[in-house]
Length: 182
Image (spheres, rainbow, N blue to C red):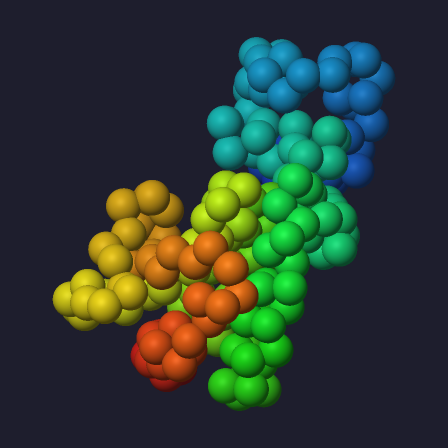
């Protein structure tokens, strides 16, 4: 069971109300800001931060799970549309690694996983596209740099500026991370 589903079950158990019931309660208050909703749920209903945060995000539809993949991708590449071709080339090539590859768009990046996440595709800035890669224990070399940007979600990164940067070395590192994630 995924963590969000478990939280939803625990919300019902702990409060006696479902997520939909809590969303109706929050909407009846006319609160529009995340922080205001957190304060309301914690103060008036004794919620822990985790449950208050879940209900606030679901009420405001501000979490990645409340948005369609295409909407998330469109927002990721807003102002960075020139990187969409690079993204699609990466998806096509990584998909050939195996039938167990999943692409999970989030707000700022796309998670790439097998049994666990092995890469992140990140339109970082208007001039830089980052590939975060999980290769714990590998020394940075060549185009593979130590990652200090993703808060430990990846051990390394590769910085690209255009589709011409997609070399066999890039795909080799991704394939290695895929193999280690199985």
